[in-house]
Every structure is written in structure tokens, then in C-alpha cells.
Amino acid sequence: MSLPPGKNLLVEHLNPYYVETGIWRSDSLQLAMDAGFKKIIGIDVDLQWIQFARDRFDLVNIPLPGLTLVHGDSAECLWDAIKDINKPITFFLDSHYSLLEGEERGKHPFPLIEELYQIGQHPIKTHTIIIDDILMLTHPDVTGWSLSKIFGGLYQINKQYNISLASNPVIRNLLIATP
Image (tube, rainbow, N blue to C red; front, side):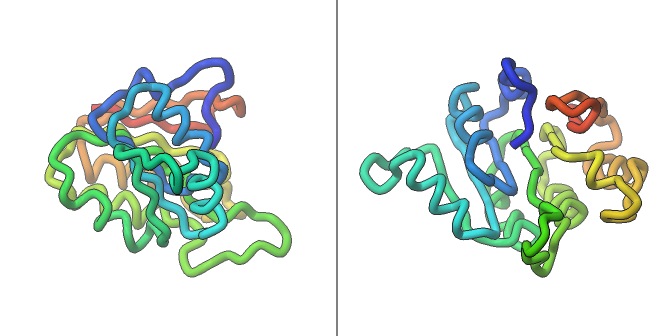
């Protein structure tokens, strides 16, 4: 989670659903709840972070009917999580390998392109897509992707997207695509 401090950016991008990939410590899930999203899906490949969110929100004792946690690789399971949703979604795409020494890279260390492809399969094309850590994802030593490659993936979903960069607090590290 890397949203601007002191401001809940998600309030400005409210849709009927919120889907986050890479939930880490579930701070963005909390911000989504605070922003007023009624249906929230959090996906993470690391069972540790799924369990952390279950504990944080005390889901064992107090089920939250609007919150669904999915343990899985978003490069492969995002479609299953969204295929039956028939309303616009605000996506917060933050699933990636953290570049920490000793961390497992996993099968899909940077699943963003696969995530965009799955979102592109959805019949609704007016989703809001927020991509975190865009500076890392476009660093030549990390993924080899350029902003134009990521823009291309977004424009495959909706050619009319308005794309902007915001700070989070790292300057211009958050990409936001709105219809």
C-alpha cells in the first residue's frame, strides 16, 4: 500500500467494487472500507498477508460480508475474482516482488501485464485502474517495461482512459487511469 498520506485517494475513485492485488498489511483494504466501498476483494499470493488481514479485521469472530480475501497469484486468479461482477471496479494493482534480499521471486514476480490482460477480458471497460510503484515497475533494471508498454495495456482496455501520475508520497509513483 502506497497511497498519499493524510488523504484517502480512493474516495475520489469510488465504484461499486474495489479489487486490490498485493494486499501486504491490508492498509489499502482499510482505506477502501473508509472510502465507502461496499464490496472489496483482496488478492495476495502470500498466505501470510491473507492471514494478517483476517486477523486485522477479526474475520473469524466478526465476518465482514463485503470483504473477500483470495489467496492466489493474481497473474492467474484475478479473472476468477472479477468475471461475475457486472459493475465498474476500482482496481488497486500492487502485486509484485519487493526486491528484498532472500525474498522468493515466485512464478510471476511482476504480474501487472497479466493483470491488465485479465481486466481487458471483462465486458465493462469503465473501470478505474490505480497502479502502485510505477517507478519500480518501469525501472530498466527491474522489469524492462516502459511507461508506453503499460499505457498500451491500459489502452487495450479502454482507448479513452485519462492517465495521470500522482505522488504516494514518492513523486509520480502512482499511475491512475480513469474513464
